[in-house]
Length: 148
Image (cartoon, rainbow, N blue to C red; front, top):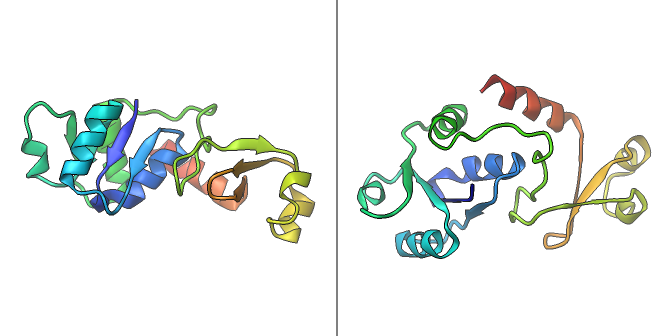
């Protein structure tokens, strides 16, 4: 399942990406852009905009909560999103590009020295030129997502 998330839900968009869901998010996209992209790319629109939610014929899910964990719960009931270990952290949280597992040597110059010395598994976003690794934030996020 693919999503397009409106500008009111940036944290939710990032969380969906971390969970491995293809999630389009552009803070500059207006309602017309969102509807067009949703239609062209077969994406579910996730919004808090009650006016947009009234548009007939569009695949729209209205999020009611302002709390991120509650938003995830709402969406999981609607879209049946689930934690899948194979999908987790497979997309760049910043740009939505699928990340690629890379060797330690490939990221040596862009990760902190301590991280390089203590970890062996890294992913890389070719678009953002960013490296990712399973640090303390990884375990915290897994725990948080499992509680939802």
